[in-house]
Image (cartoon, rainbow, N blue to C red; front, top):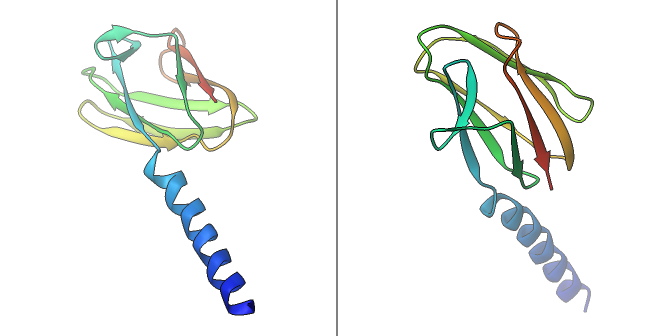
Length: 113
């Protein structure tokens, strides 16, 4: 019986790890014309699921520096030029404010469910 419990617990752990990675999505948020855009449209907010990734892609001919000082998710992607992108995994539920250190008018909220 102990062997059965051990095998079952291994399967449950494996299933938990596998299911959390299989269903994570990646969203591309472009920096274009000093705004955040998704699918070519300006956005000020986006809702994603816990574990999802946002790829911030610079489409402007100048540098951007995407960062967040939110308690839920603090990050600074550093400055990066046109054509480059950097990713952030959002692993906790809540709201994160995202800004550009170079262009203060660039602001969006990420809601993680």
